[in-house]
Image (cartoon, rainbow, N blue to C red; front, side):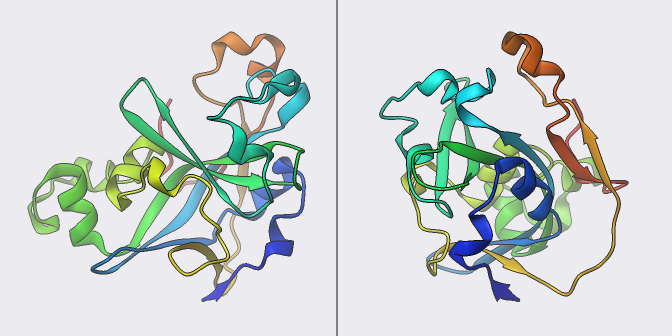
Length: 203
């Protein structure tokens, strides 16, 4: 695996969201390495995107990471209980990001299982194996990603994304999830996932 360089993230969130599919997200915890293949993403395009936290130039302490340099993490809380991990795109002050919605577990399955269900991986039912990381809140819980890593440099050694040997796959483009408030933006086809991958979240 080869860690992605800063230049990889220097592109529109729409382009980055598709380019991240098939890449490996790596989180080095204090005890082990957890790895998941990115299988589902959503693009948030900033100023003109009514679904984005930075729509119309909105700027708060929570969204400050989105305004930062590309290739950093933006982690926020939803519903008062679930963390969501995003990759900052474009360049500084553009405030675009890609939400990582689904991962296929690759390495560290035991730790992911304990984090999500408080039981060994071998004790999981089939439905629980799928539910380890098939949603943005689920994958953060499984990997132990919290708001403590908000702003983390993804070219560092703790949390980063790697390219791997390319395997061809088809990409599905569809509507984003959970943004009914966003008027016309709710119909934009800015959610992307690897076709037929079982770890894609279900609306």
